[in-house]
Each structure stands twice: as structure tokens, then as C-alpha cells.
Length: 487
Image (cartoon, rainbow, N blue to C red; front, side, top):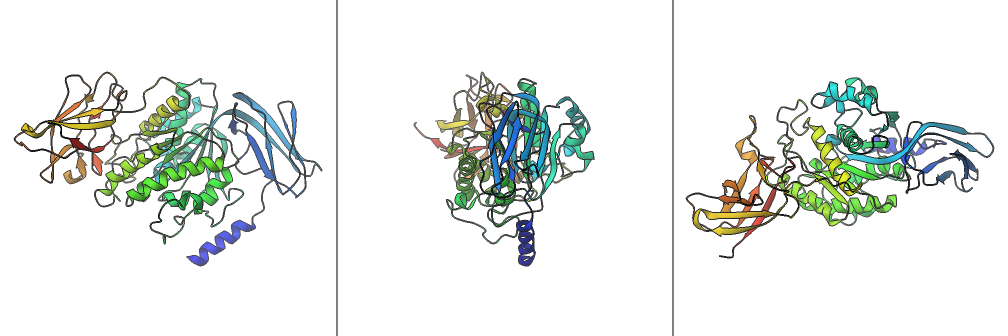
């Protein structure tokens, strides 16, 4: 394995760098004003590169082999043609049908890789892509990793493409392009914004990977290392070097992340590593961009020993240590019958739509709700029947809490399912639950018990049984909080 890795890295290092970066191309979306998009590539050292765009000539600074040109801020729209050539006319590239809009990076492991042609109602969802020609797609190729940062992508699975049934569905070849979560995120954005706003989606993911391989050495140095001797591609920084670093010159609007299953056996580590990675990506990109992520859906196949998975869901929220972060709760999007294993639920439309709600609020300042009820505190109401009241963060409930029936699905052990529970006499017990008179709180009880419980939980299991929603039909995330005793 070590020799194999050395050979791959040697091959990568010997590849010639292209005149135009592999991350660019015709049909692409460049980031609109007020940001300034960049073009870059490589030529002979000392060679000057000219860029002709929108009636203006740009000149790169002569110097090393890499050239970079920063365009003037350009409002949303297009199409444009961009011509790039060297001063001696030895190399020229013409980029056509270029749009300016908002560009998002979508990254993570297999649930981000999960293709649109694998989702529920896949045929109709793929066919609908014909109605979104201003969404443009790009997929980084897998199979290459590097022990040092690379200048350019080693492979591209899908060059910049106009959204069509072919570019979204790839003839129904599963686990290829295009990422379902990324697609539904971009599609939902355009459905809720001006339909004339181009959206660029860049998918860079690899199934079965852990956060360490997507993090730079600088980010990793901030957290005590765990599992240091894993095989590639999960060794530290390998995919950061090969699948993220070559994208850093790209001006982006934000990032979308679906990962965590690979680190579900190390929730404490994830609480450090996740915000460190977010801050580090922003620092390297030089952009304080918004970051959106998926809280892990229910699964049992491949799940770590309890309680690591529910604790991982909780430590994903450590991302809120940094600003401009949004989360999509998906504990109601489990799929016990998924033919891809229940770790890979097919309902990616719900996931992408909820991520888009967060972006609509945080990025576009739209008056939309993207949070479900967020538990704030629990207080003991009475020792009789061990009665407890749970209140929620203001603004996350709306006009009312509401219940929808939640069942432990057939094929899932009752021990893997989680409802409303109270911890009393050192034992977790399922509680009765009702919505308070003001429609803003939950009241839990243990009929026949007259003890003082110390903790309350909801959905604290590998397979949370979701039943609690707010006015906007958004689910509460799982929680485990202490109970305050004031009586």
C-alpha cells in the first residue's frame, strides 16, 4: 500500500499544469458582484497573459509559471465569452457561455456523493433539470490524493455543464454525478430567488472519508489527533491537498457539508475538528463565507456503539462556535428500506431544501424560518409523576409546537429508537408527553413515579423517532439537557 501511494503521488507531481485551470471552463458560473472573480492557470515563467472580457483587457503580472487575473465586479447575468492568450500568442483559450451568479462548494462523504439518480422519484427529479438551465454543475474526480498541496485537480469527473437530465442524472449510473444534496440545494435556492440568478455548484466529495482528510495540517494541529494510522484516502490532509486546495483561487459564495458518519466513533474530537476546519477553509479561501451542514440522519448499519452517534449529532453543533453557520436537521429523513443501506437515506430533497432555507435566511436575508424548535431549558414542575417542562429558544417555535406520529420503523430494534425520556433513579424511562397550554412548551411525565429526574432527552438514539415540529413543519433536533429543580 505504501509503495502504491508513493507511485500515485509521483505520477501526480509529474503531470503538466494546464494553461487554464481544470476548475474553469465554458458554461461555468463565476462569482458575481460585489465579489471579484478570478481566472488562473499556468504558462512559461515570465510569460504575460492577457484576458479579454466584457470590453476590457486584463493583464497578468509577469512572474512565476502560475498566472492569476482578477476581474472587475460583475453583476449577475450573462452569457459572456472570455478569451485568454499569452503575449506571444502561443496559447489561447476561449471560454464561452460564462455566467455570473453565486457559486457554492459541496463537500463531504457518501451522503454528499449520493447521486440524484438514486433518490425517491428519481426519474421525475432528473427530468425536471431541463427547467434549470442557469444552474451549472461541476464534479471533481475521485481516486487521487496527495501528501502535499496540488496546484491543479488531477481529474475532473464532470466539467462545467448546463443543468440537463443528462448532466444531473448521468444515464442513471449510481454514485456518479450529480450530488443529490448539492443539486436540491441549488434548485431550491433558484426556486426561492430570482429565477434569473445563475447558481454554480461544485461537488467535491469522497464516500467513507473522515474530516481529517479534508482538513489542512494547520487545522489538524488545533485538535488532539485520533486514529492516526488509517489507510488512504483517510490519512490527514490527503483530500484537502488534492480536492480542495486546487479550488482555493475560486471566488465562492458559500459551502455545503454532509459528513460525520466517518467520525461518529469520536464525537469529542469532532467538536474540535469541525469548527477548526470551517475557520481554516475560510482563512485559506480568504473569504468569510457562510457554511451550511447536515446533522446526521437516523441510521443503524455501520453505526458506532451507543451513545456515540447521538453524541456526534450534538457535537456537530459545535460548528456554531463560529459565525454564519446553518444546519439542516434530518432526524425525520431516515430510510430503513434504502437499497444502499440505511446509512444512505434516499430523501435528499428534504435535506437540500432545508439547507437552502438556511442559506435564504443567512445569505439572502429572506424572512424564512430554517430552525425547528431548539430546546433551551428544562425545569421540574412537580415530583408527582416526575413532571418536567421543556421550553425552547425564542423564535424557533413560531405560533405553536405540533406533534406528528413517530414510530420505530419495522426492522429497527426498539433499543435503537429514541423518543421522549426522563432519567430518574439512574435509569432512562420513556415518558408521556403533551404540549403546554401556551403551545410553546413540552410537558413530560412518568405516571406513577414521584421522584426527581435529572435529565430529559428527545431522540437521543441511533434512530431518533421524530414527532416534534414547529409551526413551519420543521423538526426539533435531538437533545439531552439537565433538569433544573427549583421547588
